[in-house]
Length: 569
Image (cartoon, rainbow, N blue to C red; front, side, top):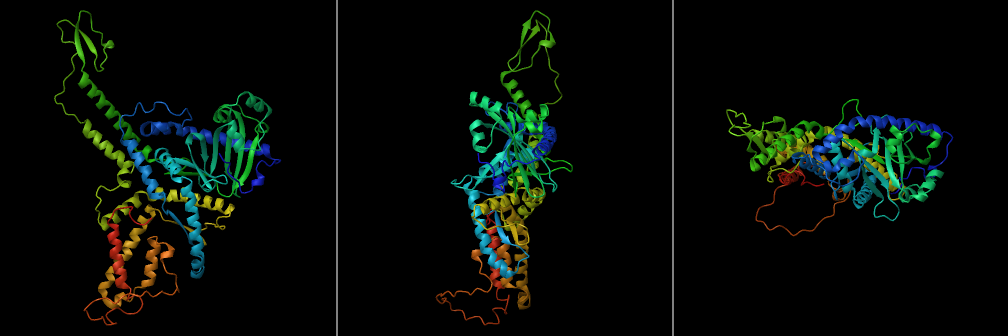
């Protein structure tokens, strides 16, 4: 495991006079953060038990493997969670696709934008290449599963060692290992991460750290000794202060929460530094006012999920009784109802000549379990957005149906997608640019929204822009019926450039303003029709470009009939 590189590598482990005060403050904040986190553990366990029981280690740090999910009978919720996580991966950060662009900001002049565009395009391509080489999709998919189930996810974005295929290294941090808190800006940028490291891993991560004498002696006797380390990342106004503390051997949470207060002078500081951008990227699905951790769609659908699971359990029990039956046998003794067990294959004794244990027959035998179960499953899929984020049932959708589906998806995911843009996508790009600039692969780029802007180009972002493009193309088609006067209003070059930007066309495919057009020699067309007079071909300016843009509108509408997600990424 490679230690995250701070903005000042020389500051790691540097002694300071206020070490004890800093450690004491961090330990107190860590205790409060872990105490707040404990209130959420119960609902997290319940969400995982009914959706992904095999991922219970995301909440409780335990032994991997083992038999899990024995109380899960209905697979609707687990399947819906997997589909939503896969849809988020495909719609927000699709692998091997261009899901973001670096563009010149609005404060620059057109000439400066033209000069800066190729530089930003190359930097974006280099950044995307490192994302793809680092197997980013594998770890972000695990984080999406936590996001859909628990409402909060954490991704560790480290710099890889020199010589690796990528400069980035990603790790999906389970919620069992972190306690979070909001910073002054309302983001989850205060992170306390517990980690248990073997002795070789500890030496590799903190090569210059010295163990206390008692641990050195114990490590010499126990080669498999695990050490508890607490990593703290706290915003301080100048960036993010990083501190790594050695808590000794054992469980760091028990040491921090349950154990006696440790004097600050007895907690060794393994590393200290400062990051310009936090290496821990924590993001939420949604949140309630006053809460720190996020709320997930599984939490909203949990009552229906539990009810459907119980209905399926009862149906299976009824089916087993119907197959094996419950039998009666003559008995000379006295029937004791307390000893009767209504299980498949049971034999209930009865007195000779008596009717034995007789059930009370209802007036009708109307089985509503399947009707109830169908409604529950439909509501579960609707609450988890599986019916709206998944692939459409009809592959041959018209352009209007595609636009309406994209608008519905944008409406449903509007708040959550906006939060993910702010808490996940933008920090990912900022952190990557900082690492690549330190390596000298890209120039210093600061995403301020004025000089340099981040343009989201994921399929979901493109679907949101499709409504604007569809409205513009409809207007272009409409003005064709107004004659030359209506066509003269259209600025053909400006409309074409706006459509290129909106539809995500690469800059290389668009001619720059002022560039000369290279004439292309073409053979004369074979036709017997007389040439069209210049007046009929349209006036100057945008009038002559209107028919071409009308054809472009028909072409874009025809490509939109292929279904959501088939446009350019």
